[in-house]
Length: 317
Image (cartoon, rainbow, N blue to C red; front, side, top):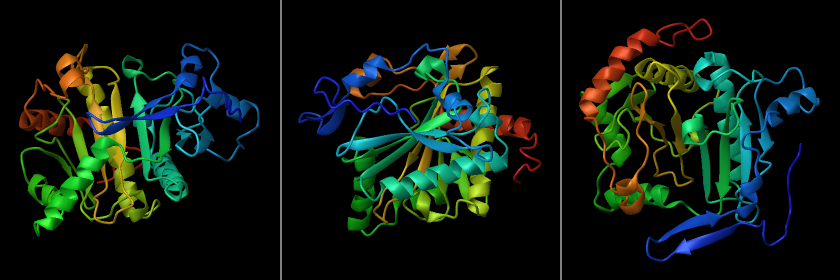
């Protein structure tokens, strides 16, 4: 596999601490040369060059243009399918289970060396997807990003006050409320009242565990998740009347007091209209949402019924 490893100072990344915002960012000049607009697919090349055998349908490869290198971090690409044109939303339950398995494999590996393991998918050219082949990414990072740190601080603050895990409390509150989109045996999905995007959903396990290693990647909880995530995205597609650009992010932590969850952030607000971060959001962190969470959830619940076509022979319900 091609892996660019140029140690020259102009290509090395730098972790930068902002003392005003009390957070780290990364300057990674080597990524200015990555393959935007290239017609050849490096992930298909894994297949045509024989680097991936005929029995492998999903795999992990190094990022050819990593934003981080050791000891600051490591960057991996998670390939979802051999099919260049298949989306995550199109995967069968069995195929989506393979993606869950990739999340577990990279976590088991990178969590041994890094403070944070960030797994995510960015779908849609409108928000920065540069390779069409279905894939996600994982970064092992030597520092804890500011948002994850704030979530952990909320957990610790609740503990100090003798209160239950705030995520466990959220599960009990939202699973029966008007913002709930899906209530399953192992997971709930709801539009949080503080959603930044009109149809943002948070997917939280009923059981408390801190990372993707907290459930069997081939068990019933994983199977329900493999049904739930693609089906939610198909609902977004119906809402937008075309494939919805979105970001999907796993929030996890090595501290057992943390509560694993997934943020699904679609950037569409109506057919042909996107909700992109603008000045109020980017300059001040003051997010403006054009939708009420309860109304958005009601819309998503109605679309859920329209996405009941089978995934690999099973609806998951």
